[in-house]
Image 1 (cartoon, rainbow, N blue to C red):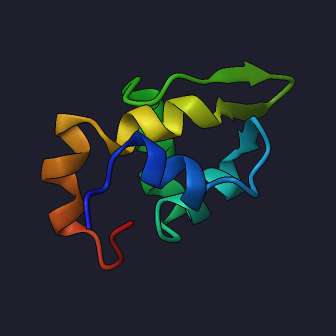
Image 2: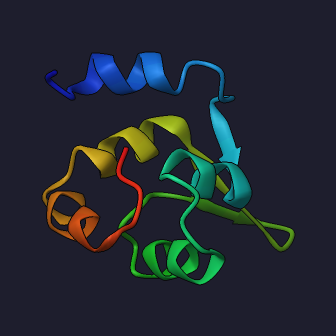
Length: 81
């Protein structure tokens, strides 16, 4: 199965256009909170920080899972999307 943009749009169709940190973690296979924050702080995923909360556009999550960084990084994860 080819995992392209259309595949991830379908996979994440039930998520809102702006996801919370918790939803972002779920979208990446329930990664840990620390790992998710490291990705955000390293600017691997475009995000907004508003009133103490991270908001991440769903498009940015899809861009990240299609990125070269995720292609290398996913091998260290227990669950891969």
